[in-house]
Length: 477
Image 1 (cartoon, rainbow, N blue to C red):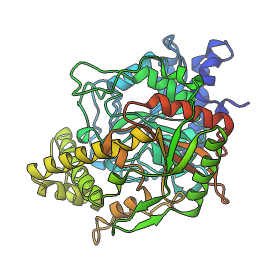
Image 2 (cartoon, rainbow, N blue to C red):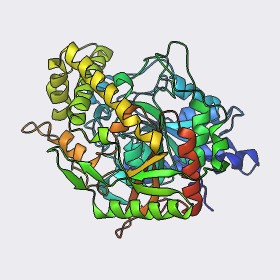
Image 3 (cartoon, one colour):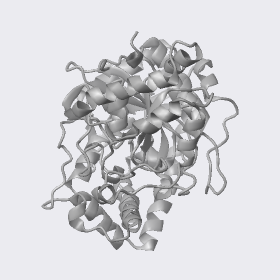
């Protein structure tokens, strides 16, 4: 088996067993990136010299010598270019002075950072096509989107350029690219992974950090590395009483699982997902039933309320305003409208119009409806849905224009109706790569657990992976 076929756990075993050195693994990853990145547009900032130097003294952690990429958003790699997909930051050569907590922990675990990956501008859209960089391209079909906003990380991991990559999720940005690129993507519970030291939370807790992976065990092991509160955090998720990796072999018992493929459109109508996405869910239902789980049509009634979209967009618009203002402060001048996508500017201007009471009211409404929807998990252990409502879309689908600058966000809402609610509720959710359509494109399914129950998600995910091993058909050599 070629090293590009391995997940991070198996790659680390090469070092432990003496079959490869950290420097050899880093050199191989760099060679694959240099060979394939022009095609895929996954890596925007190479960090090769630093990676080779660090590989000579890799710490003895569980992932000693394993190459990893960091998404160019939220997490910081001290001294390296940090753009968030924003061209003015790129042009100014903006850098953070120090690693964020997440990056520090990854380094302590033995990971070697070989570069940074592309994201949509400020992580807004579910495709990685920022003005600052070339678009990330889906390794299954390079005319199609990787999903986003963690699209570069997903493309690189799916293609085997690295075995694992950092990602984050404020409306589906781990799960969406995982679905589009045939990976496993776990969004943890709100407060599970700290944003220290630079911020307490992002968008009031909508955003979460972890990775996209080629296996369930990798996500569990990295969550073991990253989970936990840091001094000054505004809140934290309930403490896990044993390692997440131990959950992979824990029996699940017989579970009751609700399933839904329909979603509420922007006009309030109830519509079904694309037939390929429905087929992926039906395939998963068959697997779950074969394990003895009870699966039946069900969905939290509170999440059907059409008010969810405007309330969520209220939070999102204010968040864009905040982030764009932060970018201006970072470079010491105001960013002008022509320097960002029309959508970004329109959302930021909309955010400036939202009053403090209106913002607080949106959060209060969401928190109330979160309590109502949480009652669903008193009856059901898990919820199963498509991850996205259609297969990976062509590049350019979410192109922003000055004529209709908000159109891409509404198109995105049609594409990704199943992921944002669980950023708002703070619940853990994952996308599993269990199905490919007739064109060979990966189609993910989403499982959602009650708040704090990553353990249950990982148990069932491992059960599904064992019965339906993940196929990584887009791996490059």
